[in-house]
Amino acid sequence: MSSTLSADRIRRTVAVLAVVALLFPLATGVTTAQSVQGASGAIIVDEGETVNGIEGVAGTIIVRGTVDGDLSGAAGSIHVTESGRVAGNIQAAAGTLGIDGTVGGSVEAGAGSFELTDSGRIGGSLDVGGGSINIDGAVGGDVRAGADSIVIGPNADVGGEFRYDAGTFTQSPDATVAGGVVEDPGLRGDTGITFGPAAVPAWVGSAYGVVVNLALGAVLLLVFPRFSRDVADRAGSDALVSGVVGAAVLIGTPILLVLVAITLIGIPLALVGAVAYAVALWIGSVYGRYALGSWLLDRLDRSNRWVALLLGVLAVAAIGFVPWIGGLVDLIVLLLGLGAFGVGLFDRYRGRRSQRVPDRGAVGAD
Image (cartoon, rainbow, N blue to C red; front, side, top):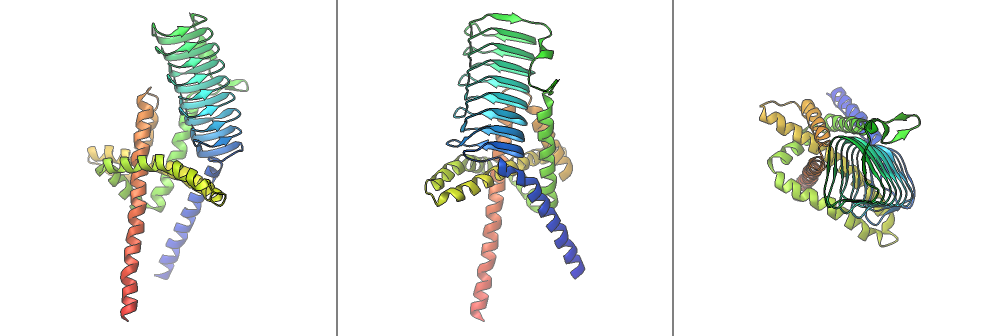
C-alpha cells in the first residue's frame, strides 16, 4: 500500500515538474519597460504597459499596450489590438496576423491569413504573403502582396503603389490607392518574411502553436485527468455561464492588475499577477480546444480524451486560416475554456473549504 502511494506521489511530482518546466518560459511573456525575448506559450503586452521590443516564438502574441521598438517573431497568432501600438517595424511569421492598432514602421510578414482592419494603420510599407489578405486600413507606403485571395476594403487608404498577385482579387470602389494598383504575376513567391536567404512558410507559426498547445494539453490531462474532464463537460453543458465568466476574467483581470500596481507595494504583486494571468489564458485556451474536441466526439457517440485534445487543437488551427471567422472562433474557444477553468478552480476551493468546517466542529465537540 505504501509503495503504491509512494509511486503515485512520485508520478504526480514528476508531472507537476513537467508543468512548471513547460510554463516557466511564460515569465518572459508579460513584462514592463524591457524587451521580451525567448519562447513561450503567450507573449502579452497589456493596455498601459510598455516594452522596448518583442523578439521570440510563441503560441500567441498580443499587443494591447505599447512596443517602443520592433516586433519580430513567429507565432500561431499575432494581434495588435485597437489600443496597441508598435513604434518600429513588424517582421513575423504567423498562422493569423491581425492589425487593429498602429504600426509606426513597416510590416513584413508571412501569414496564413492577414488582416488590416479599418482602425489599423501602418506608417511604412507592407510586404505580405499568405493564404488570404484583407486590407481595410491605412498604409503609408507601398504594398506588395501575394496570396490565394486578396481583398481591398472600402476604408483602405494606401499612400503608394499596390502591387499584387492573387488567385482572386477584389477592390472596393471606395478604396484609395495613390500609386495605382498593379498586377504582378509570380509575386506570391517573392513576398513575406525572410530570415536570411530562406523564406519562412506561413504555416510555421500555426504548426508551432499546435505543438505547444498539444504539449500543454497532454500534461494537463496526465496530471489532472478528472479536473480536465470536468472543465470540458462544464464548457459544453453550461456554455453561457462559462463564456460570461471567461469574458469577465479576460477583461477584468488587467483592470484589477492596474489598480493593484498603482501603489508601490502593489507593483511586485501586479507583475506576479500578470504572469499568472498569461498562464491562465494559455491554459484556458487549451481547455477550450479540449472542450471543443470532446463536444465533437460526443456528437459521434465516442469518448477519448486524447483524440478529443488532438481534434480540438487541429480544428481551431484549421479554422484560424479562415478570414474573420478564425479570429472569432479563437476568441469563443478562449472564453469558454477560461470561464470553465475559473469556475472549476472556484468549485474546488469551495469544496475544500466546506470540508474543513465539519472537521473543526468535530474537534470542538471532542
